[in-house]
Length: 247
Image (cartoon, rainbow, N blue to C red; front, side, top):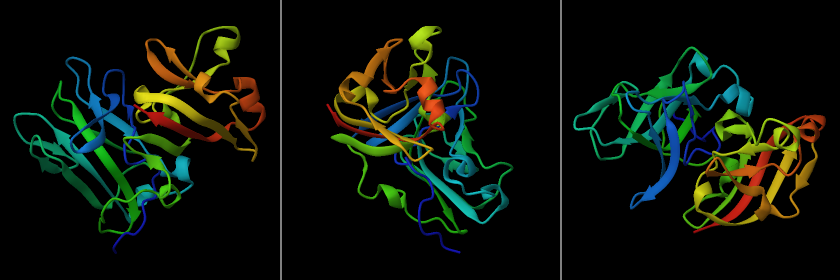
């Protein structure tokens, strides 16, 4: 069965979470081939990451029971071939690795690199119904949106993949919710819009969106424009819309 549409959002620069501390620090960067995410392990460790739980993020259950295909571009700079998802990937070139008719034990997807101290680049993740992989396309809701070399204009669904944290341990800082893993966040020069869409169907648009981009612990984060108790009272955040210009 040939697949059709991409079921995953925010998949051009796919953001995964490390399996444990030090198994994959994510950084969105670019070269002559375009934008991608580089996952770098701590010294002595190997990259191992997970994400894109389709049941939790998209309400698509049982992707772990077969009938789906996943694919993604991988690249590394090891001196020899590296096995990823059961396929031998040569160094210093983008290779699209496919798991057709994929079945695993959970709704999560991820990858583990069997070589310590080796960074790996990824881009263009896709999960689709069917047993035959097709070329990458964005989710249908993102066809007029996205992240380019010039700007961010996209919805980001609320999940651990955004690296959610708090600004501090007490008072308003404890109630200030931060997100970090937005593609190209470090290259933003102007935030034009930041809007929260809540699970109860309401939304809140930041009056001064530029002020919500802050530096915390030496790196940029977006601070949500309403405090945690308000977020909870509205059923929690469903997604965040960000429009920003890049360097």
